[in-house]
Image 1: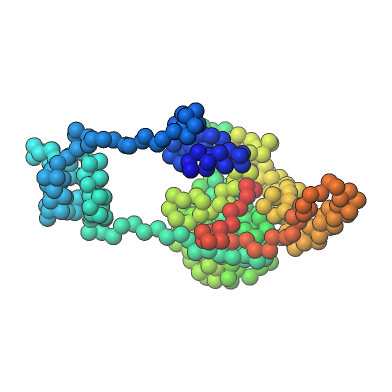
Image 2 (image 1 turned 180 degrees about the horizontal axis):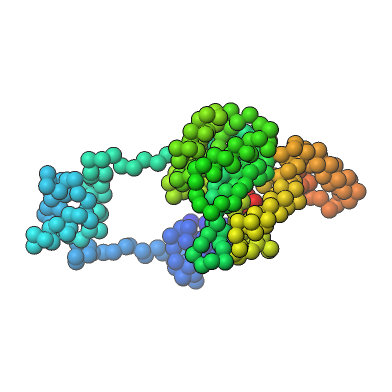
Length: 339
């Protein structure tokens, strides 16, 4: 049966070692079975227990010590050194963990609640200026160890950069001013806009939060140390820093601002974004993408009618992307492409 499954997998293009890896076999074992015309599976596993295995009495003592009032609030990493200070060695830390896990006793052992970091709430955007994402990235300067900070806000639905600024320091005041300016530039009512960010100090500072509350904005935050919760800003910064003309260092805020202004103009109005069917973020933000994609679809249909033999299936998908979800659940995950 195993040989038949491997043969079927190879017949569909799988490599032998990959098929064997999935089945938990060594490729040499399959080759030997084939050479024997089938052979027999003589894998019996280990016939004897390891000589260094703890006895039932020793395992019981480990459990008794771990559950005793003196040690029940300590982890094995703490129990083992404490026992060593008393001149006692029962088992290694890994053995403690293994025995506790087998007995279903490996749970949080302290009085405090274990840290719980739930995935951020999903936010769905069906048009521009509904969900924004923002972050801060470092820009090198000509002075070693000195950096500038680029603040940037991107519309999640259209991928358009709606606001940016270069400063010398992180500040909630700078962030609040940038968001207010972005709302004025877009001529949008900030009430109801979802503004997503990570957990940095400027993002959760009192000035920024007070501004968002005053404007009626819905704040959204990533989990600590989880960059995937803010993928749109991360992808945007990667595109920025991998531009061919990106400068490795800037003389100061004025020089950095000049370069970023050129990048924003290119990104919004020239760059064909792969995640929105290769239209520019500016076109999509102005709701021009549907007409462009309709014309592209017509071009492909006309080409198919002229030379139908060249098309074995459907033409390229030029349907507009109507819905974009920030932090979708596993059941409806929408992974954004690189910017």
